[in-house]
Image 1: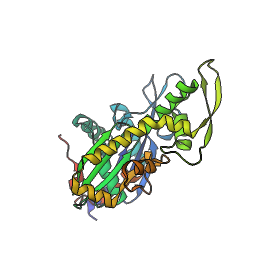
Image 2: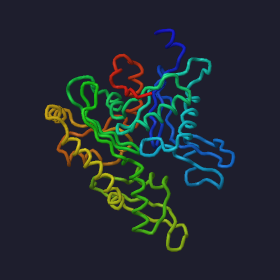
Image 3: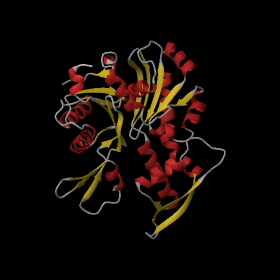
Image 4: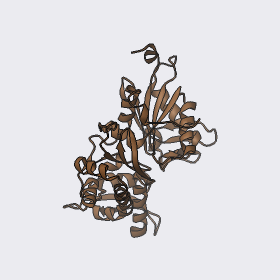
Length: 341
């Protein structure tokens, strides 16, 4: 351990549309909070960040605004992302007098140069000494423990809040990847829209997310379940309770789920034959919050005839990957995205 290692705190960040996770070198995952900032509109002061701010989504009084600064995996609101990052970095770095940290931060693989620069700049402004970017599916593969530096191919599907990334990885590089801006958020929106169209019931984002977690499925189950939900009835504007079945929610989710399935098929079609045979032997790994949607693995298994497995702790694979890279910078230098300054 060098003197520099001792006096600096290096951190890995999975900056997600829905949640931000932070890994501190030597201390594992120290933060897992929603990517939400609440501000007072008149003073522009931050009222809350993370879980507290998420509690306020759809419930804020006039003058307080709860914002999700990342949309589809990329920065939609630069200023708010910076506030979010600096708040989280301050929380995890205890000693102010140490050197500024080196940060490895994950980004979607379909990100543009402009978007890369936005991530890099906001991390620097939030207090980073050096910023390294790593593509999400690569970080997920490393976090799962796949041998990314070997010539044999591995396929990873990372379904996040804003994007779904499908990548075939070999020799420390992404051989082919498809990044679609469809993830958990689109699923929530599909549920909201379905209930509005078919039941005249208006619900908020948090309720939709709750429905998805409790009874959302991507594949027909032997036993259908149901859930009691509350919302506003559009016909008379009065709050109403409704019991909804998992079959209805599966119908609601069919569009985003089908889009992910099609993207996976497309990625398989583009895979070089040598690597395709590796994937046949090894199967596909699903990571990210979307991997927790009931039946997602079964649905993909049925559509591709390949072995599809959900990673052990799908929500933390990407941030674990950034941590492993931090601990072995020289070994993983090839996987980091060098951006243009």
